Length: 308
Length: 312
Image (cartoon, rainbow over all chains, first blue to last red; front, top):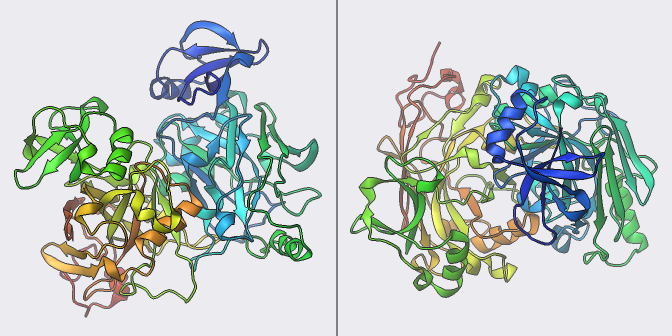
């Protein structure tokens, strides 16, 4: 079942949840509140929630980021060996993203404001499989049973910012206003491997050129392990999202955005999350030799790669 | 003016939750008409006169105070902001982090031991008194004078799980600061006009555990003043109405850290705001071995008799 949050165009409200029929190109409203139907569907993902009213064409609505006002948005990194190979015994790095960092399908990606005070910063894209929790975790060793489903995420991050003296500044990296996107909808886990690790092709295209490509089966830490570690640190609850890490880049050292880029993140069995980048980067000065040098160094991974 | 979020005792659910104006002399709270996201920006611009009060005041004894947060509040903080705690390297940026809503309890509520101790038993769970800034404006106007956009200040007890294993990219601030019901906030927000106005406040901080003082400092000692803390935070994640920023803790008195023992009674006082009172869970599910206490130095003074936590 495909579950989407949607509203009227330019409404600005929280909208409503509905069930998408991708073949027919329609969405139909779910009668109950998210907090009521999500745990029920999670318990048995083959059941569709009770619907209300008539199906409406998808083209007549605006799909919104599939989350709720109380969703905690979490992420992890270093999870694909073609991006970074972890060392033995290493823990996953976890972080939070802010609600204000998130946009939905088709919305415009904003260049991160942090670059104004730290001019060496550059905003980059990262395709990620995103887990949505359908209820609180009851057994940490079997937390896949508490997953509602999966969606596509673009986890934009700022690279090249100054670290604090405790390490990488993950808050500064991951929380840029309207820099990251999620959607277009949640696909329930029964369609994507059930309680087992999903094995899905993930593909990032920038202006129609493939720049990231992998399978979710390649993860260093499978989702079950991530949920175990994450829930030990921060109790997960209904509607919470977990970004599960990005894979390596192809043909480019890193995923820097350029103004007006068209970004299409696709995951097999879910769909395409499409966004456009703001037409102007207000924090970019000239493309000088010096700046290109800095980009090379940042892309070379001095700060965030290098352990192989 | 003091703003509290509260629920009438015995009433469940979000329907019973309200914001009100507290009169500490009369020990009452009077409900405010309208939504927080409407009156909070108005008060921030126009002063306390911008609130409209609703029905009659009720006794504070008939309500449960809740953490002064909106459901969508972002909760962020920074470390090492008082030289009495840690002196950071010259030019080092403050380490910043996010806390989840589920980590916060209100006044008088029970603080829980973190589950993460079960798989990382080397950790010590500690309290930290912090001045907490509450944003009133929808957006920060002048980033160099961001305290102008504050509704006011409240008191935070930022539960910290010290000693977590670092990840590949550095210290695990996520694991350290996110535990379920490990931190407290309240009892209310005091508007900036009562605490020195815009700019840096100079208020005394005092932590008392089981009647003994264990932290003491003044907010004027901050390495990064509140204006700069807000500017740096807003550079990273846009601040908006109802967001709260923890501004760091001061040093400990006579002990190297402030780890909890089961059943501790903890009172955090900030001059001009009040006292945030909490109790710690009566049972520690993961008792600490005495060798973990203060590096095993049992000669250190403290508020707990040596060896009262675990030991076998």
